[in-house]
Image (cartoon, rainbow, N blue to C red; front, side, top):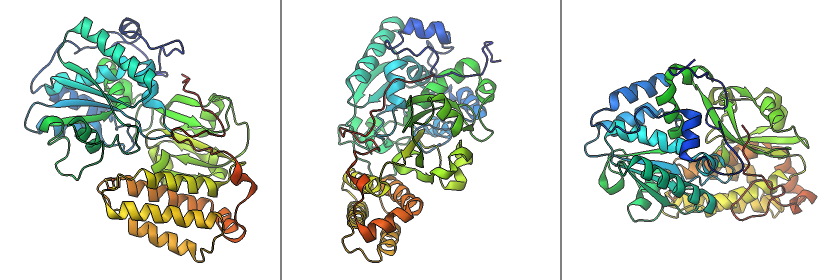
Length: 438
Ligand code: SF4
């Protein structure tokens, strides 16, 4: 039981979610209760919150699993009045969790940001969303409600971020909020040192803030009462693939993938591989499906992590080489073209994979690709090239037989099918829904 008497089970974040629209502030308070610090703002009041978040063991939910308490401490110890930024830009095409949160349950993330702002003495909270109209409208409505009921302190601002893969990287977001392009900048300084208008800036993912809002109410022990020792609590997972009910699910860390698939209505076809962690994650052979559990420590033996909570199941009907070729070309197109190895490395890798796919004389392509991967890895201003070569290298390994077959015989029948991996604005083999399940 928590400090206010509620149990620690699921759903936590998705409690009260409804397909009929976003929860109003009143409905939100009915479900979760008053926020203990929502009307108070303190200078130098961060120690208690940092202690609480540290004891909870909250890790960021944007993909890197960075300890949230460390981030809070870095901002608290920087000079100047901090700014708090909720990152719901979600440039990862295979993820729907942040837009689901903001579209359906917008007050949770705003709660967490309010707690953080009060503790850090911040006077401004900026909520960053992508271009989806329904998400923007829900965010605007929630901000309006809070301003009417809670007044104008802290200031709440809504910002729209271009729908690019790297737009949600912290430095890109800050650059955009400072009037520049949503492109990563060379660091240092880091946003916690000099972010929005040069102020120390706390940038965290929308789901991370939602957890902070719940930890402030229920305490760290409640948070830790589910999940694993090294990754406590629950997480939102976007599950897609040949399933009856693909969508956004809330899981306890360490849940088996098989039980999540059951919750999604079961498989409608066999699965050749599982992509964990999104487009910077890793492919895992489908034969491992029944052995997989969803936490970073469970996925580490496969070289993976849960990342931003993406689990994508590739059906056996799909051509993995075509899927990899499309992914490589898309990742190359998402380079912001500021760093040579990223521009040229990713572009050349995509070209070589396409030549393998159509059997256009790529002898020794395996060694060629391995060399390109090692020349690209670790050589950009941001994490994009590293993430890209990680996911592509895992595809070469898991789909090695299919790559050999394509390099000899060229296209297969499945090459003509629509993509199963989602891309913005591209028709897919299956339309996944934004209807989340609790
Ligand atoms: S590594 Fe690539 S995506 Fe990142 S800043 Fe450089 S060019 Fe842009």
